[in-house]
Length: 173
Image 1 (cartoon, rainbow, N blue to C red):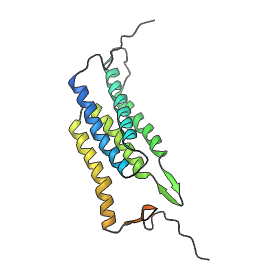
Image 2: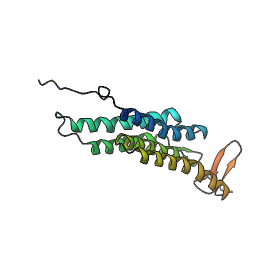
Image 3: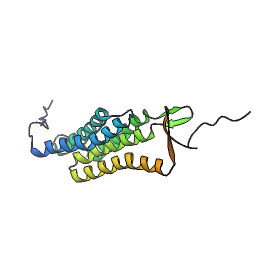
């Protein structure tokens, strides 16, 4: 049996790897911080772990693609599987409560965090920063815009909801 010579990601540490980790922590950490401040299920720790996991899958698939022993390694296929797996994880955050569907925005942010992990692993740091800032703007800015335009409102003790969107209305008898 042939012995494979694996090279660890940590055996050839470069400044680029530390920059990737730092960019990832900032990007997904910002989104996670926004989710945590908004008291949503997936906070800063969850966000960082999702982004880190995605980055590791993509990073190691790239390494395996350059390895002489891993002839069929394809980073694009790995990214496709990350998308599928994260979709399953996001589906777990979607709940139906009193006729209202809740958690879609959290599921979407989980998907974006995984994508950011892949983007950082591929080395597109500026893109990752721009998309994470855009995501935080959408999460915070659009929410405030909805309230300002009276598309949604905050009900004391119940949080924010949109009128007429999935709301269960008891019929009069």
